[in-house]
Image 1 (tube, one colour):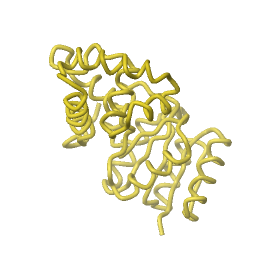
Image 2 (tube, rainbow, N blue to C red):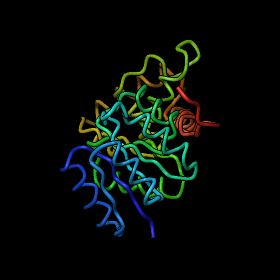
Image 3 (cartoon, rainbow, N blue to C red):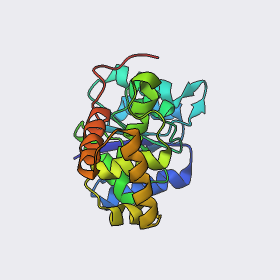
Image 4 (cartoon, one colour):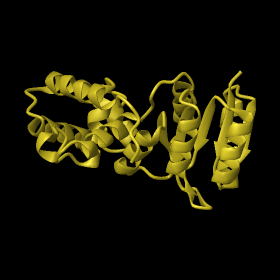
Length: 220
């Protein structure tokens, strides 16, 4: 049975995380409302999975430093960041510090549980569009095929890589079918794709590269 430690200073978030985990069949859930007590509980209880909010700042111990300390104590622990920040630079810093996965707080319960299940077995987790944005942030512009793409184009590209149809992409992004057609036309031009199948092939290749885990954790 998986033991999970949630570290977040918002009571509503703690309650919501616990409820989602319990609905998914996880019954051994521990809570901490600050980084210091969370780190202490980690040492006492030794959970297999730790869910951490990056916005923790007590006694100088922030979310990133907490991830580093937990990772230094146990290289096998799974760490899922649950944060309000979707900035790809912040996401990349969390992964470099030792996080196994990253999910933003405005995600759906289904995606949160998907992230948890993947992280629990040691699989790196990022949503597809976030993975592309992280890859964009970490690659120099002149070498980056994603340079110049807008957030909407990145989202569309990630959904194409998942095999979504134009109609499904329009539904998922809450835009019109015509908007999706126009965005894909722009993507073909920017990525030098000859046609839609070629664009999908490029999207799959870029997403696969973006989802590759780092070779090792490096201190910042």
